[in-house]
Image 1 (cartoon, rainbow, N blue to C red):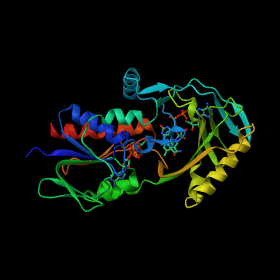
Image 2: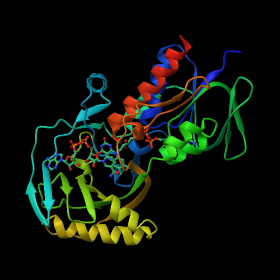
Image 3: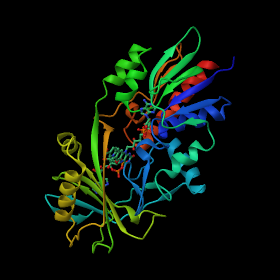
Image 4: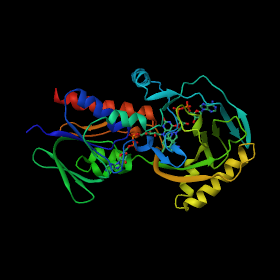
Length: 328
Ligand code: FAD
Ligand code: NAI
């Protein structure tokens, strides 16, 4: 039997691996508990257009990633974002321009993963709860009690806390994943009918509940019907207010925003809050990917490297490369 390879998670890491494996002639099947692909690079469709609630932009520093981003740009999946950048420190807002190239998906962040997924076979709204191996092949069990398989290999591409349970068949891998602490982030989107009277399009914030804010509509290809903003709380504030009701989170972060932005802020015509429970690893690692090649079980994700978009892509490449090398 020529069993296919299961990939759990259709964020950038899982899709990066899927690209390599299918280009090498392997059949892959993808699974995601969400209704669509993208994970933390997903964009939320709303009455005021699509909003990037997770990853805001990304940088490319590794040569391999620089090359692939150039290809994505040529295909129209990404565009450079050149925001008017600010910094806010002890309540003082000041321009903070730099030379860093920053990329965003176009016309929304999720355009990248959507394009990478293409026509690959995928099961959405399918939360995998167990991964187990018979004599020769792997089987996946989902939350509805349905089983999927047989698979020759399984690649787990979820955040570390969700990966550790799925890696139980390889205790070393499960232990490594369990050792990774991931911090939460509360995200709030606001939309105003009339544009705010400010030049700020992106701002790194210190000494506040806020960590970052972006004028979403300043990104290339976005809907211009409203002045849309995305605010991210710091990990510490998010952790301390993990179970706060969404309305209270919106009120608090909207207040912090109004205080620091330096112009009149009318009541927003649209608000939204989203809690990312596993937003970022507390520290970076140099693992590339995790592998038990003899068993045929692999793990990848941003948490194996830098905890950034680039790290997720590189980790997926690494997992797929190791799998292919073991087969050769
Ligand atoms: P994910 O994108 O988390 O993908 C994992 C997938 O697995 C998800 O789709 C999930 O639904 C699925 N899944 C989980 N458990 C299961 C299960 N049991 N069964 C099936 N499916 C499952 N990075 C930057 O470079 N720049 C930024 O500006 C930036 N800002 C960020 C802001 C926020 C608020 C957040 C949350 C992240 C940000 N990041 C940023 C980080 C970046 O988004 C991530 O590094 C990257 O998207 C991670 O990709 P991944 O594929 O490793 O994981
Ligand atoms: P980057 O080089 O733009 O930013 C890295 C860090 O450098 C920033 O966090 C900021 O502190 C500082 N910085 C950069 N440019 C600055 C400027 N012009 N003025 C003042 N400070 C500046 O991008 P990189 O390295 O790709 O990092 C990605 C971004 O994603 C970071 O801001 C990081 O905090 C954020 N992120 C957020 C997550 C979350 O859960 N909220 C998860 C993962 C990443």
